[in-house]
Image (tube, rainbow, N blue to C red; front, side):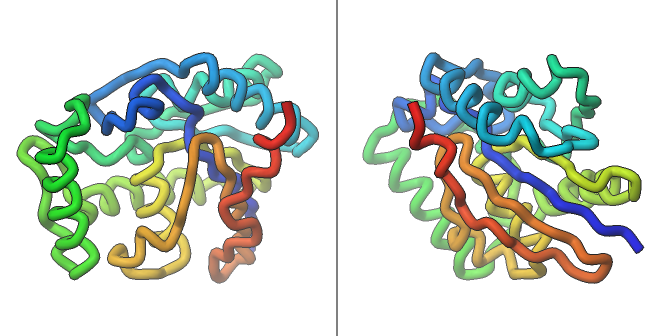
Length: 206
């Protein structure tokens, strides 16, 4: 029987995060000073967890967030299925009343169950779910990896937590997050269960 504990974190802060600008899959940004501090805080708090493997997205801000674990020699793998949702033409755009209205509009549609809707050149929640299922299959195909660290992205993490817990994607906004917050999820061989919800305790220490 496969049993696993998944430590799922969002990447640390970037300048676009700080400015309230949507990054998405098409913006391969770096952590800023605050993001690097958050990465150190997380490492200090969880360096004694016996992680067997790290999985990250193909965007460098996830690797930068857990680089200290990699430097210790932990094996890691990049999975495109863990990439952020692609926001298409709105990625990197300044936050204006028009762009805010566009995001509110599409998110309202998603909550209403219209999960195939997407921005031009972007991705829908259903499309993200399909590639996340591929990534999850890869992660779960290694029964020897008992403690797994996963670093990914905000909107994608909300969708991934729905996938794991069997909730409809319309409930994605029930999973709050901030930069480098932790969700700890156990798998008992039958089902996934969130045992640590939106934990930011490690960020409260200087």
